[in-house]
Amino acid sequence: MTVAFYATLRDKTGTATYELDLSEPTRLDEILRRLIAIFPALKEDLFDENGNLSHHLHLFRNGRDVRFLNALETIIEPTDTLALIPPVGGGST
Image (cartoon, rainbow, N blue to C red; front, side, top):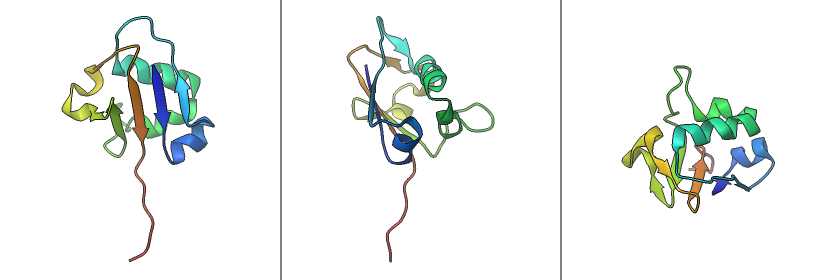
C-alpha cells in the first residue's frame, strides 16, 4: 500500500510517499503502529495524549476521510493509498 505524507509530515519522514508492504487487509490502527515503528517522530502527530487519533490530523483512505468510515477500525487493503495530512496554516488576510 502507498502512504502519502503531506506538509510537515514530509519533513518528519524524509519522504513524500512510502510503500508499506501489506500481504492482507489490515486495520488502520495496526498500520499507524507500523508507521510509528518506521518513523517514530510521527507519533505526536498521529495520536493525542490519550492515545486517540489526533483531531488535527486528516487521514484519507483512497480519498475518503477515515472518520466517516470506521476510524481506527477502517480496513486498509494492500492496493489502497493512505494520505496523512497535518493541519496547515499561513497566508495573509
